[in-house]
Image (cartoon, rainbow, N blue to C red):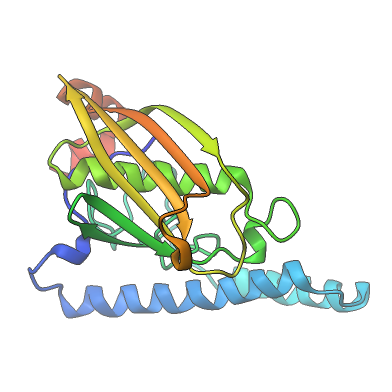
Length: 227
């Protein structure tokens, strides 16, 4: 389930403090290198000796990430939540080693996401895992809710796979609101290759619900404490 409350951060005009920019840049730089390492890791045919040597090196690097480690539910200081930048999102986060990462922008009828899936996202040989497609659309459909001022959390997501999603090909995802009913928001989404954007390979429809204040406080106590 995802909660989004405002429009994508790419639409904001307020200046970002220089120290926050620098920290986000460093997080994104590490995330980029980790994605390259992840890609090399799942492609390699190196010897067992080389892999053991690399494992020791990675273990040493992990030990250098000292200081406080946040727990689940803690809000990263570099994030804007609800809504806005999520540096470690597994879908859009430039600091996440598993994110594509997808770039979200506003469109005339909703939101779009542009991304490329790598071999680390592979399901069937040469194609993306179906669960990755579901995660990407779940995230983007949440952004569609936020973009219209009707934020919500996923309560239902139905997927239809028309064809396999290729790896290492520019992809385009779309999402838009189709209706509302009280706190319910109905959303549709799709994924296609950018070269043939009118032919979706994956389609989805979902229902999102905006939690009331009491439910939001129970789900996200860190937000209540931050107010």
